[in-house]
Figure 1 (cartoon, rainbow, N blue to C red):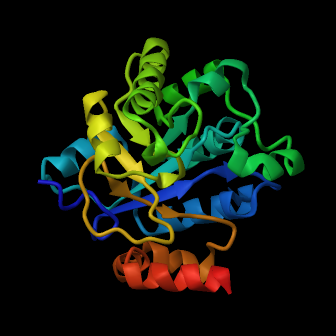
Figure 2 (figure 1 turned 90 degrees about the vertical axis):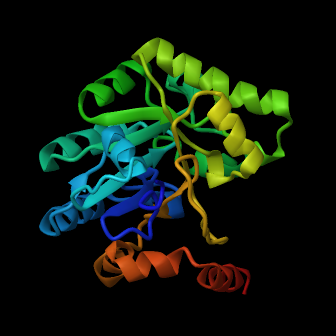
Length: 263
């Protein structure tokens, strides 16, 4: 049973974060002050932080307590420096999806789509290192794969796709002992990518259907809702609400957002 594994569930909320810093890419960054306010809101609402065991329970059709799944893409260094202490303070779990070649050196987060952000926010746009990742894993993070080089997986041939998915998972498993979760870079996936993820051994994978909407859901295509600098007050409350999340993931609302961005 896979029905509860999506953002239209009343008892499971799936959010996507990137960086928590005072300066960073506009739609990928929340300030530490705002992030702590968001965590306080989650606590007031009685939401617990979800981990891999909760995904397994949902996939099995089990009923869980109201849970929020906090996922951080790209492995920004502030996920260790800022997010980890706050999660410990608030008693929450989270996921972090990393790119092993960048983790090796704590390298800049640099792929073509973020080149301008990399130049402007040099301090923020750096990867965690393996010692940081290990501390995060001990502190309540589930560490998953974000591929090797942050490419659009739907544009790759079969061999390149398998390398991005399999090699990344193997390197994380070698370092941490396991890697069963994946966040598709750019949230970009299709049935072929999903099948390749399954063949490579992933059990759960996350999408980010911003601008497109998403109807169907499987354990390897769990849609998340992005959280950014605007998400406070009523806007954040809407993303926490069951009707708000259903609306956010609808194709009509997604089409409207695309039109507003082009205007």
